[in-house]
Length: 434
Image 1: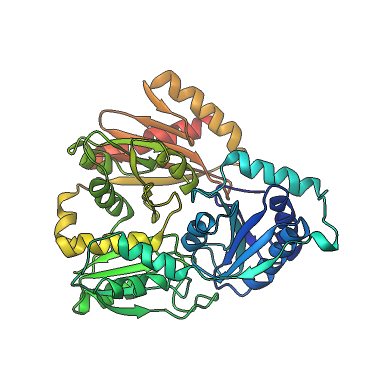
Image 2: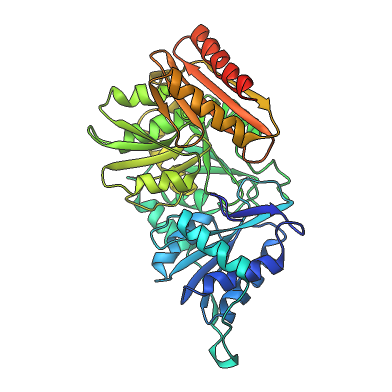
């Protein structure tokens, strides 16, 4: 029920008010105070009401932040001395979806143990409801100003920049406010919260953010910034309009955050270029399964200075273990103020990467057979998330799709012909296992 991104799916089908009520009751069984917020999706208010009702039936007090970015809610758990946070959001998914993601006081999303505990309580559906005089209170509050203050304090200003911010019709309005406070001249796109996401699809990919890149390229801008619906993700365009690849952003942030001898946490599908770029700075890479919850778990370790996913989730553990898109926005702005991003990215290598999909009706059996084969043939094998094989030339990853009857194959090498060879080797392993 709870994936690494919480509960997520179509409203009225997988995600209903009844489910939100049961999630509230399950969470209320182990909490006294919970912070609740939501992104601007039309179903969000209804689901947040149901979630809050379930919490209050168990005697849990609810601090309702209303429309708020996911990182604002995650940070507010500690600010409000709460036991947990709950955000009604489907993040970068399309408008017909919604969901619920739970947060710990550290800012970290609920881990596997916590998600399993919630699932068991929801499925048991046997809450210990309070009588009329034991119902929890519901109060409204806003922590946007506190988040804003934290963002401004996170970098050294003033920043003499002109920045275009594509809020994506989402909850990330704190970003342009923070940039203005830091001395930037800011122009916004799609700044009106609207859960239909009429300006562009919510996920801040290069394709979806083409208008932002074109605006930056054609205007007098130093930087472009884009968020998804709940602002846990941030992507950026350099001053020349180049939309920065996620691996490039990861390399920039990691090199800035980590000192020699420290580590950064990245998922198994991260480009080899990031590892090479950081190795020149004596910074090591720790690989995790795909998903910001796993990156956050690794980032909580003492010598890990930064964690990130190329999809746009960035974690500075000294600040919070929640991916904070607005924090990433002010930090990339600070980097751009020191040296233009279009000059910085020239320092980061890029390698050919190849991808393919193989259809199968039995993903588990195929992956098990692939794992057996690679251990027989290769020396450097990781099974954190799928099967990742490292060679002198590069690497390949074989991973089952979480949503489709597919095995996804990715290969990368420092040279194009070797990338093709590694992809062919990986595909052959999968085809032989079908």
